[in-house]
Image (tube, rainbow, N blue to C red; front, side, top):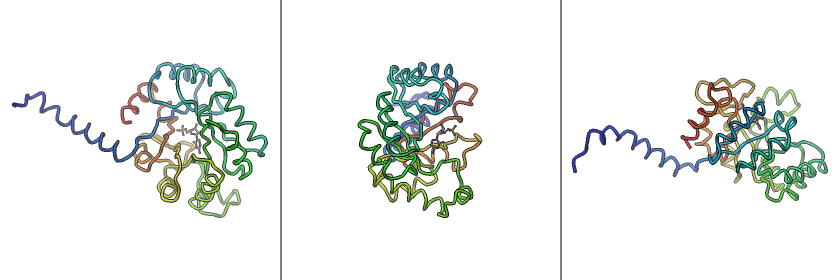
Length: 248
Ligand code: C5P
């Protein structure tokens, strides 16, 4: 069979497709989570425009404090998974009550600071039911000098390993960590990895410190990749998210 010129010019696209398929086999592709750190109008437009796409929406302080159920209900009604990023950090009974309330909102993921301590973590696990609890290890905005300033004299790697091991021992199955520590943690533990502090090529780190690229996060085994300002600050955030989704 003779190849048409058109078919020959198609070859690079096909090989790119094959490479991507192979990458998908080698690395389990993560889910993309969009951090809705925006005003309500922008958030609701994005949620509606991305209907039926493979995206998780994360709600944090900005929207949750002002809009509460209005934003969480919209995410659920449009059929998306809800990631409630409230980073619970309190005494065990208060943490437990927070998890129960998050359950009532239909949260699929909920963050809790591992430094809340073992009792708070265990009580959270006891009432979590279908929520995937995510233990926050060391914020991606912190570096080792700042750890020392907090009176923590471990290296950041040792500190993250210690917190991860504590969370997993208490029954927490997911950890929020920097892509920088992901290879180390994956070599030691079996867990569900959520990676914020991800930047698309050329984007500034801003207040984040331990940032990685999207490709690094995928290669290092992230299960959920959180993207915020790299897409939200784009001229056309929706188009940027759709471009990123094509890589998944
Ligand atoms: O804009 P950017 O991509 O830096 O946003 C990262 C998001 O992930 C923010 O919503 C932030 O609150 C959240 N996050 C984080 N580091 C953690 C846990 C959550 O940056 N350890």
